[in-house]
Amino acid sequence: LYYFDIAGRAEMIRLTFKVGDVPFEDVRISNEKWGSEEKAKAPTGKVPYLILENGSILSESGAVLLYAAERAGLIPNDPVQKGFAQQAVELMSSVGLIFDRFFAPKVDVPDICAALKARCEVIDKILAKTLSPEGYVAGNKLTYADICIFAWMKKSLPFMNAQVTEEILSSSPALRRVCEVVEKHPKIQAYYSS
Image 1: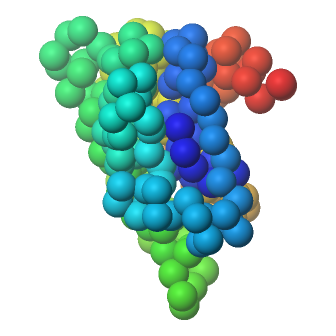
Image 2 (image 1 turned 45 degrees about the vertical axis):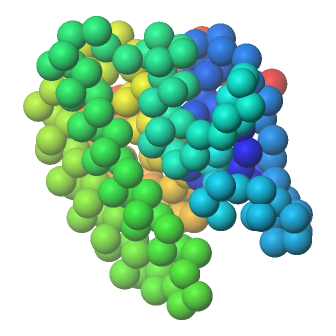
């Protein structure tokens, strides 16, 4: 798995592999190497991408996450729950599009933070309708969607603005609950303690 040495769009993939005990090589690319040599290797000129066992390259974070989730056994079997899981992942991808604005040539931090708050307010209302008593968005056990939410809300967004992320979570009970549940998972705890 090739990505920068930050959480970003790869953290949900890393965590999905870890929770499912799926071995993978976590290649962290420095900014210096990205511009000089690694960008040319990326099929789309972007990361993350994953080199599969047969040498094929899988690109685009959503596709790599889906592959990781399948390998890890973290996709619900029930079609309705599978739909809810994918809905949550796609909702969080819209957060990713706002997150990407932090890397634009001209950054308007207050505007980006306001957009994040507004989008997360909408997402929280949608997720609240599918949230299980256990705190999962698609059924009564951990899925790749829960990991995706946790990775964005607790690892990627705080990298850019921890205060705004905490404000969002304090006013978003469904997002907060999912993050709390995922954070307590033994394999998530082990990953961050190593």
